[in-house]
Length: 489
Image 1 (cartoon, rainbow, N blue to C red):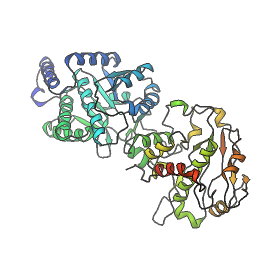
Image 2 (tube, rainbow, N blue to C red; image 1 turned 180 degrees about the vertical axis):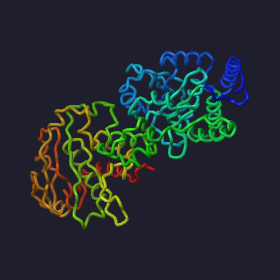
Image 3 (cartoon, rainbow, N blue to C red; image 1 turned 90 degrees about the horizontal axis):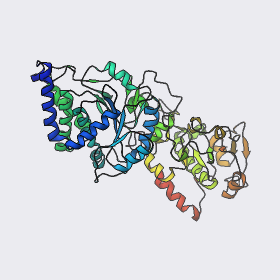
């Protein structure tokens, strides 16, 4: 490590070591979250789990992001046989669950005033939780470890440590977050500059009540002026290899699994989208989610409905997304009646003279707030690529009915044609199918996946049947369908 403060640059090696020891002791007495005894315990845990050259991946998790952390563990830690990692928590319960699964975990500091509910970026509770991160990074640096600080809403495509060790020539290197350093993926060496940086971050957080992302930017701006004679103090990682959510998902137009591959990508950070529910759904639509909580993928007894949103009559195309979302409400109702889980279709951008991407396929989060949708239908739907997930049993994938089409006056008017190769169901009332008919026709269907060509216009111009018994379900739909944009803001 060669990038030290100006006043010690020319000291002999022994004097440099003494200077660092002095700085470390001073820093720890002022800003560390741990006592001397606790720091020793933390150092012992880091030593056990770090590599022989004292490199370690540190990730913060609490109960609210448990599933996200376990997905990170499966897709990135286990997949690439990474041993030098440690999950850090602020509550003992989370750590106990990790240790039960034989996952490295350490209770860094317990805070009773933080919530275990998923928090929104830049909210007071979010900032309160994230404020712990600079502390455990700083204490690891004080103990002499090189840290890869990594958020849990991240997926590795390769082990990043191999590339980082060879490509990082500075004290601090971070993933580019559009125009600034991302606090959720930073590689930090235990140097004077790094110690100074994280001390400044902590002080900035406390003085200005900022999140650690903003504090990192301010600290870098401030210290760069102080250390201006040192050009290699920090660097931005190659953004062709290390990508934030905007670059990977939106600029790269990666919405479904057939999207263009990223052969150079090493890491993707699922940020620039609000709420855990939206992050999880986005990962799932690209097969970047592996965690099989409660048999989400592997359950062999769950029954499903699958359908598509095929092209509609040209006169209706300006309102296509409204029609597709109303059809989703219809299908959720059918799933409720038949006790089947709905596999989402793909949705389409509305036709517009100003749209260069008209009819382009998009996932559900392009229109609905996934937190509200999950609040009502969390266990009642699956992502579009669900049947292509490796953890879904073959007996489910191979047990799909031939496509049905329920022919009503409205469904025919919407499509504008009679779809070929389908089993046609004609209701007694040509305007709409009844609940009783749905149950009689499909209630005893034993196939794992009930396949429909499309489900437009099943109840005439209504989304679901009008009746008093439908009032509770209607309330669920109103609560679930809160409209937004892709990033959920």
